[in-house]
Image 1 (cartoon, rainbow, N blue to C red):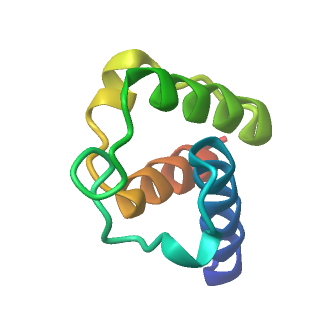
Image 2: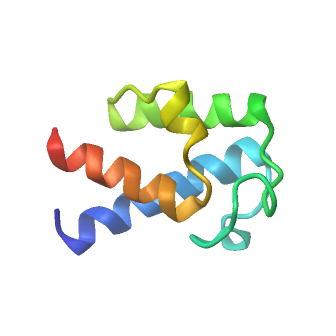
Length: 85
């Protein structure tokens, strides 16, 4: 997977998180923790996962979603999964 592919995934993940949380995309960075920094609760995480599954045509289990701690980890997870598809 090339640099450009990860950039596209990053842009889409940040778009999804910003839309669900109703905050500006510019306020989201890869090193932000989903719970501590962004205060994502279980309902918001569910909304983000469902939207990511739709946009990236993949299935993300609850355990996989619960194991993601930062925005960057979510991007890397999706990039890794997309690279195998």
